[in-house]
Length: 95
Image (cartoon, rainbow, N blue to C red; front, side):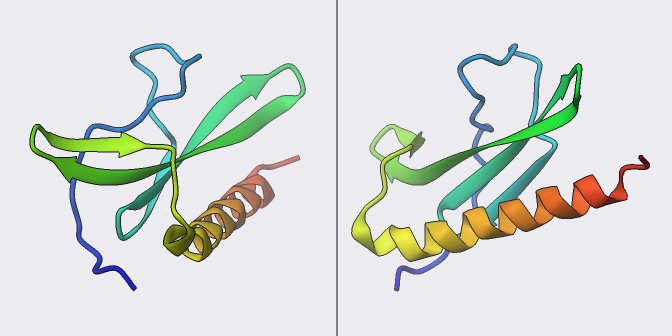
């Protein structure tokens, strides 16, 4: 599989978010990243997840939402970990 590397790029934000918003949690698996976003609603807090693949070209580090076949199992593990984090967070909330 691909060699993993730790980098610190600017966090990817969902298109509908405000410029000041940040994810409540980020998960990394090599060059794959999942950002977990917390959205308060009338019915309580909802969570959304965005995923990205980081890559470097001649102008520096960039991110894409396109994944090749070699990334898919790693992506599945990453979103499974994001799901586990969200479920654990929801169970911590007092009802």
